[in-house]
Length: 137
Image 1: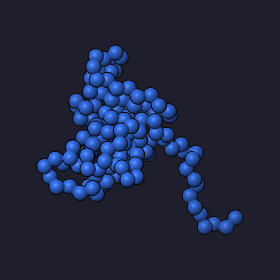
Image 2: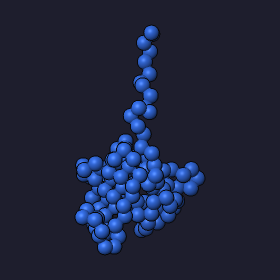
Image 3: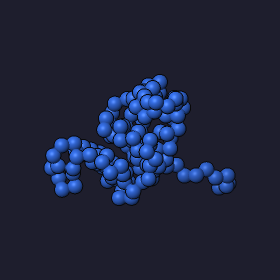
Image 4: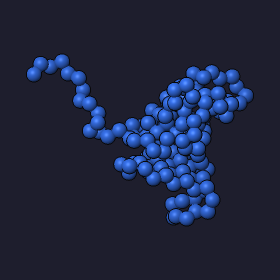
């Protein structure tokens, strides 16, 4: 996986501050534009609610770092009461919106919290087991 973070002076034509671009081993591209509040997967724009975008933006800016649910609550809901389950629901929805190629990049660390793993391995189509059938052979 290649990860390109651009936070200072652009060095590439498509690089600029505020743009986080991740390319998986199968050439799938996740693009998070922190300035325009947009997310693209393989060139298709994904619409995210404000809180889910903020959650994804925070995680992709700090890849590999584990954040507890309490930390994410303080970050995203500083003035509103929120439960630990609220974070779980938003993570689940975010994974669903990212689609099959990128949902596994947000990793659950049991007993600790969540992290964005830039070295995740996207599931290959060949690794999906065939559907179960009751047909007799």
